Length: 189
Image 1 (cartoon, rainbow, N blue to C red):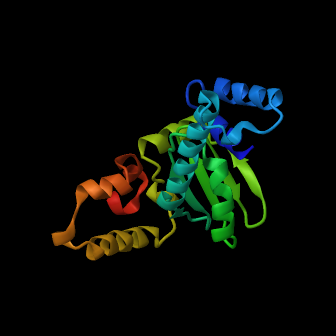
Image 2 (tube, one colour; image 1 turned 45 degrees about the vertical axis):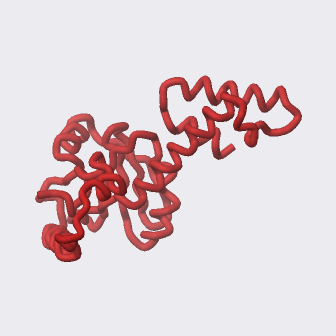
C-alpha cells in the first residue's frame, strides 16, 4: 500500500495508469505482486515509490525555517514530487512544541501545525506569486526581530566549517543538488 501511495504522490506522467495496472494485477493474482519486480508494471510502481521516498528524505534535511513576528516558523519548499504530507510526521515530532507552516510553493498549498493540530494552508494567489518570486523568503517586515541575525550566524557557521583545501563542489552538488539551494539560508549571498 505504501508503494502505491508513494507512486501516486510522484505525480509523474503515467503514474496514475501504473498504479491502476498494479491494483488490477493485485486483484487478478492470489498473492501480492509487490515482490515480482520482473513484471514491468510492478517495477514501474516500485521505481516511482523509490523516487518519491528519496525526495521526501532529502526535503526533510533541506528545509530551512524562518521565524515570523507572530512566533510561527515558516518554511517554503519546492519538491519535484508531492511529498509535503510525507514530511509532516518528521516535523510534528521534531518541532512538537513550536508552531510552524510548511508550504509547497509550486503546488501552492501547505500545512500549519499549532502544537497539537495540523491544518491545510492556502495562500492568496498574489501572495503565493510573491513568495515564488522571492524564492520562499518572507518580507523582512514579517520576520522576527532577531531572525536576520540568526540567518547571518548560520551563514558564517557554514563558511567557517568549510575547509578551503578540501572543497569539492562536484561532491557537494551530488549530495545537495542545486535545485535545493534557493531555499537554503547558507547558500544565499
